[in-house]
Length: 114
Length: 114
Image 1: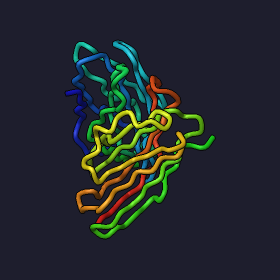
Image 2 (image 1 turned 180 degrees about the horizontal axis):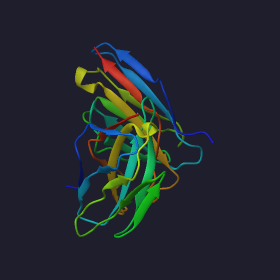
Image 3 (image 1 turned 90 degrees about the horizontal axis):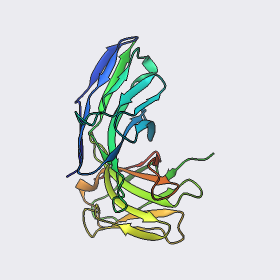
Image 4 (image 1 turned 180 degrees about the vertical axis):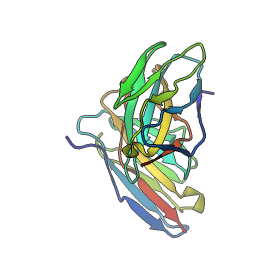
């Protein structure tokens, strides 16, 4: 079935370090891909998304490129801040009228130390 | 504007007790989703409404779980005869229309069954 596999955490980085969180997907159709972030005590927030191959989603210095050939949507940021500490979820949603739900990865906890 | 709200934020129940979890979606949002998030995992789909119609309940884990949205806005997820394995965070999300990809999540209700 359709699923998302993301890099296991936790990930601990120093401030200003480069971040990569890997995400790969399996889907029978043509999914849209998302990264959601969950800050402590808060709900999931959409961080960025891409709806077709080669699209790049970006927000708050984070980027991810939809790679159909490698079925990947890795999250990157050039210089992380302490405030980026959170749990990051990769997710997909099929552009299928009959499909109503999103499929999430297990989440990757990021801790950024000053 | 106001986001998705959920209440209560925390609920402790004794095994066998019935619980009701409430979701107030963003005003005007047609689609409403419920997810279950176990500790250390990503959210998993439970059920989906379009207005007052429950179009997909394939993710509900047992017949003890019941959801309704009688007037097409507020939704209630009810769990009867709670079991310890029901302990999780229950997330509600809404989107403006069925085909819209971006779902907006509430903060969740953390349910602990003792």
